[in-house]
Image (cartoon, rainbow, N blue to C red):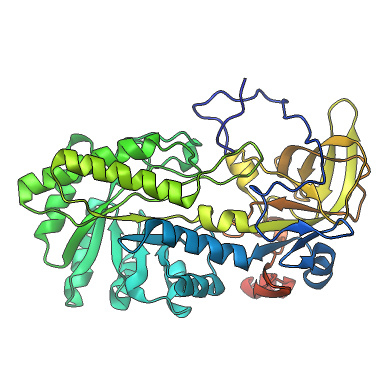
Amino acid sequence: MSRSAHPAGPRHADVLTEGHYSAPAADLNALDEKVWSRTVTRDADGALTVGGIAVARLAEEFGTPAYFLDESDFRARCRAWADAFGPDADVFYAGKAFLSRAVVRWLKEEGLNLDVCSGGELTTALDAGMPAERIAFHGNNKTVAEIERAVEAGVGRIVLDSFQEIVRVAHVARRHGVRQRVQIRVTVGVEAHTHEFIATAHEDQKFGIALADGQAAEAVRRALALDGLDLIGVHSHIGSQIFDMAGFEVSARRVVQLLAEIRDEHGVELPEIDLGGGLGIAYTSEDDPREPHEIAKALSDIVTRECEAAKLRTPRISVEPGRAIVGPTAFTLYEVGTIKPLEGLRTYVSVDGGMSDNIRTALYDAEYSVALVSRTSDAEPMLVRVVGKHCESGDIVVKDAFLPADLAPGDLIAVPATGAYCRSMASNYNHALRPPVVAVRDGEARVIVRRETEEDLLRLDVG
């Protein structure tokens, strides 16, 4: 049987049965460039370096566990997406993947827009200086207070997710004397080949307004009729961590069909179409993600073809990469603690972090790579399961991987491709302290999100 193309777990494809795993790499010291950020290498002593700094120095200065983000790689990926889609399209970085004020400044400097989905993300974006007109506001249940803040700030678009929200946003906009630019999020009925918890365009889920039974068409009618709204387009997002473009083709076809219906019924050609994000990255050597220029050409060709068939002007395309930008740019550095060999099974390697800094393995059955990074080793490979220090048997960071058999307490190991969602979804389970995010560039490292302290925990506990 083949391994699933999706590291978040099985849904449609054939997958390996429980207890099966790939053979060890020929060289456990090798670093697959698909999985690691672009400035990661090993120095003359065999230690991993990022941005020209060895991990031992990083661990000494910033401690472990910690996320180390390759700023040069992040910026390069921003430019690659912007260049691939060009000036006639819009790239919105999906802030939910990872957001901080430093990241917002990088996005602004590299010419990307920003997609937020909560009041907290909006506050971070505005505080860091992102122009409001370059912000899109998502969310399936935006509060009135969040809508007020977005309208007052002048965000470039609010993505409407329900019939109730159409009225809420129109009411707030009228009260402020503005016409708020909006898109309608449409559920197109495409079931992406992904884990069910991150597939977002099939009908039985919480996001969007269904195309089925004319619901989306009715939402458009209502939005066009309200003075406080300026309907600029339709939004569709089919899921996350997707490698196959077939789902996007079906989604685009159905969205363009809706645009044609809107033209025929209302005499309006909406000028924009947002195809969302969800493009996959490499978590293991077996993943094969597409490059931004390939994605841009494929999506442009799909939309152009469908619009020509429907005799529509081709709308301006928007996309929302988040994981595809930040995911590969960071790794999590851990120190090895307890090592427990289980005869005939595997060796359990416990680290000083766990599900509090990476919940994705427990939540999505996600797969990750891992490497010994404080040194190289010629020892034989041993099958390991990297686990955390939390009081849960499901506290697994890497389910099955190979590390050198001479691994010892005190060694440093790193899990790559943890830039997306790991810090965003981090928790204080067992009163763990959330790790810092450290940006590394050109031989310099600086904290952009500091490590939590016990004082931080007690400050929230009012007794």
